[in-house]
Image 1 (cartoon, rainbow, N blue to C red):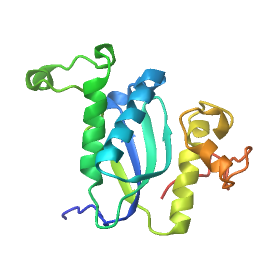
Image 2: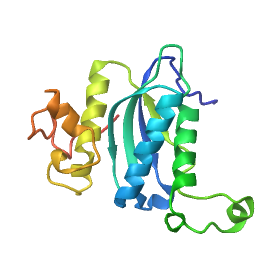
Image 3: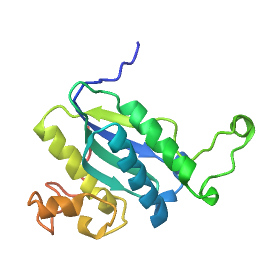
Length: 177
């Protein structure tokens, strides 16, 4: 069976992007700042909207909406990941071995990412809730508002969530399909 990614021009997508070997490179505030800078640079060249996002030590989740007529999220992620890799301090990058070393590959990210096209408003709400509860789910903080690398505070400011929000389900029950 041939697998075809569901690419809808102008669609909204949920992504999970993971560091290589789940290394906690985003524990460093400088790496989070570098990721933000790469996202801004990519958005300036190839526009899209970040609807929600969280950056955890070893992975991130995001919901993006692409412009009408555009479904090219793969090249956006390729450029963002490449930009971060090229601009990060050398001590962040692990020493590649074997064939990777021979090719000059740097291993900061897992090669692929996971994507899901958002189907409707309920699907969007579930994925955004998942993003914001994720730091709690991983035991990093007690409340989503305590995690600094998240769009949660924006959602509180615009009235989507109250400051003490913990999701429509408990952190144990809030899972993605």
